[in-house]
Image 1: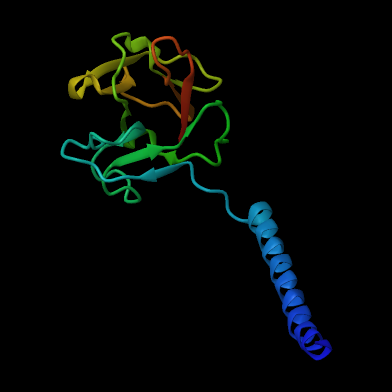
Image 2: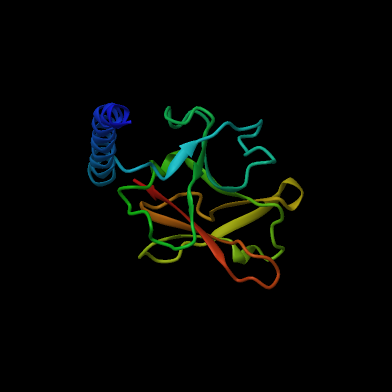
Length: 178
């Protein structure tokens, strides 16, 4: 009995020590990635259907670019990441787009409210720019663009209702115009 316990200790103690070192090394790597790694992008290019619109099953806010305006986004459609708190992404962390390349902002939800004023796109810290809104795709999308057709440089917030009839919560998306 004493010999088998001695053999077990000779095998298990070094194995446990190696496992502890592996866990420690992984925690150091996680700390490095979390604190010093690149921040994730706040937007991603997505496939589009004809007419440069999101597919029917895709929900969220998108920046619709003019065809071929930005080689980073071959579909000319950029999906923005959402947040329930405005200002989560700084101007440096948001997708940077040229003003002349942007056509409109598209919001896709299961239903779009009849009151289009609930869907807002505005530049942070600048004068309010008048926008036009057009409901599309049987009331599941709304297309928002400045009345002037020009996107002024600045950091923009897309502010949309996200709750139901009795829920006043909102969802925010951001992008930056150079």
